[in-house]
Length: 371
Image (cartoon, rainbow, N blue to C red):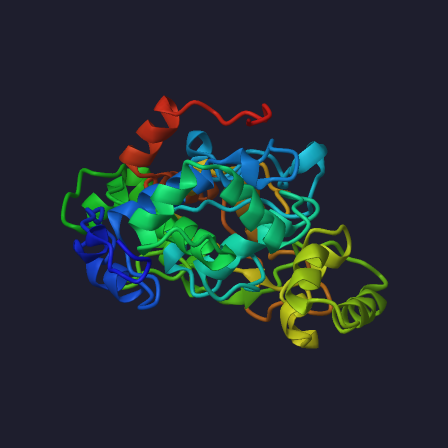
């Protein structure tokens, strides 16, 4: 069969069970036309996702920081890459990430495909010199050639094909059918009375719904926008730091790669969305995270600075931390301690039973050298 002949598996319609509470029509709509789903591609993407050979010292895979044993997130405050190097941002869950309008805390990648390319060559994450080295490493593994043929119709291995496969796998990592979903569907006994009061507060005095938006067609508890709520460090030289960042990004190197590296460097990281847009209004602004399975993905905020959901609620209750670029929508909530507890009880109802079971039955990833 020539490389130009369509591979039979590509013709099969991809089947997936969409969990209750997630819109199946939106899932289908968000599949890129230039990266259609197939079982072979998803299988290849899963293998690549868990392959530590994609890191320079063969100790870190995508799954190292996005581990099924920790709800496809990481229980460290910030991501830890090769040689135990620490970044400056918390690793968010991959669950439901296909529904993000933009990827990363600062939205610097427009798609899962583009997101997948960056950690592999970030010096603090997987540490590969460039994408050519990544491709060579995958080509060295003979078992990949037939897998690429099954997924793409030929054995040509490129960074785009690698990223497309990983992204396809990630689009199958969905989480729904939580007690909240059953409650909204009409089961009044699916959540406790305390959680129901928390849901009322979420939509009322707690003001959570204004940014962590929810409706039946967009049930992800996020507006997917960027806000400065004061989590970022208050650097007295923030203006000078912003100026230095723009200089580094415009010095002629690959701007995408330089921006990616700065996001994990202490100090520069706290510039947030500004590193992407260069707009002063975006200094310290980070994406509103989705709240599904939030109980399972501690610690919280872009820098992992809040250890528990109650800590998060206390932060919001005081109105965040005022700073020069503070979001105008933030203000003290004046919630009582019992009300804060009720808010936490509500957020726990967003946990998928299936996701919890997967966590409990998954063996945590290791950093042993892969051969």
